Length: 302
Image 1 (cartoon, helix red, strand yellow):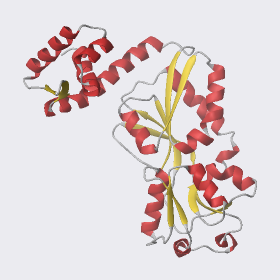
Image 2 (image 1 turned 180 degrees about the horizontal axis):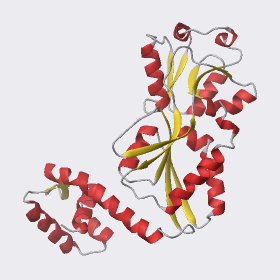
Image 3 (image 1 turned 90 degrees about the vertical axis):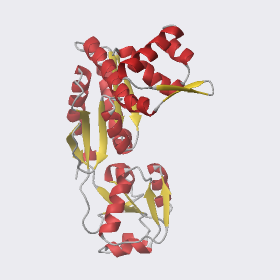
Image 4 (image 1 turned 180 degrees about the vertical axis):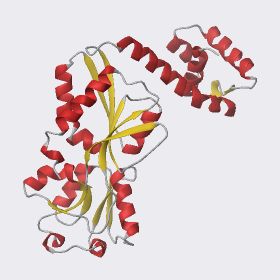
């Protein structure tokens, strides 16, 4: 089995036309057909089928696709690592980050790194933490920077960068801001702004609600952290949020920050990499800059 056959499997799943696959690979259509038949003979099972003028993967082909994607990604990574191994002044560095570190932590670090190494092309993908972890597993990014509760896994290696405590936020004029001691049951009495289902904040919020047997009476669900802050600023709603994300509003007296009553799971910001992925010199240097600058930020004060 050669690599071009696995590339054909992956591309055929995306495009469903031999001509498109041939153009992308820079080969002729009969060559694509030859490799498809050769692969089926080699595997001893039908991998492709034609329907309505298009080519699709069979169930066996779908099973092979899973490994084709991984092998193709590893092949590209191997070529990149060898090509860029000794260079800090050219190449591409693809970082994946969840919303909080991407917005409130990484911009000055990206700025410093790009000034120090202007020849390196920087890419930042901003997704929820679970998606960033999946991108790492699939070798789609070089490094992840995520806000998450502690986690372990067979493929990913996480290193703690700093704390990212969840806090209760409300308007300074909100009734809860005037209470001397908050109790979990107080949360059920007021409108609550929930984060989107895929966010780690939503997951921890759900855990807290279940732990304290709280049923919210009035909720608004929003995917945008900034939209949640704007809703809270209007005075009617409360929410749980990363303290890092509301530091500016807290300092300027726009939002009241309170400890969440009762027990809650700890949360940190982690750098995460795939254990099977050989770290490039760019990744190692970026992590050094990230560690150095993070300690000087007042954002990380507890």
